[in-house]
Image (cartoon, rainbow, N blue to C red; front, side, top):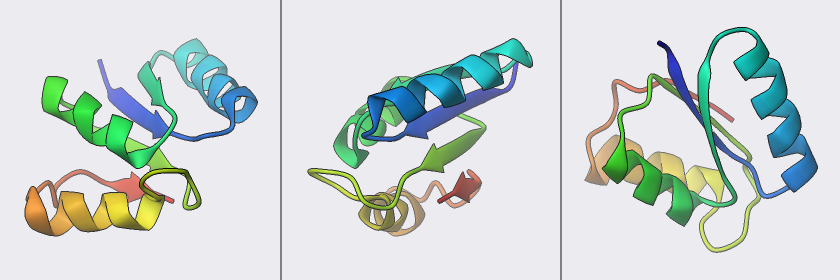
Length: 80
């Protein structure tokens, strides 16, 4: 099953993404910031990440920098 990580601080928007994507057969995990996203990635593999740009603690751009350079997850597509 295709696994998607959603990093979005707006709870209602995160739930909307979750509802639509799970309805279409995707396995979805939702988190509220970049730090939580990194923790989720340490625990599980994801095929794609959908991330908000402006989030508390670690924004979407910082998350991308960590994934692409420091952690070498350059193979995971990210939609901002």
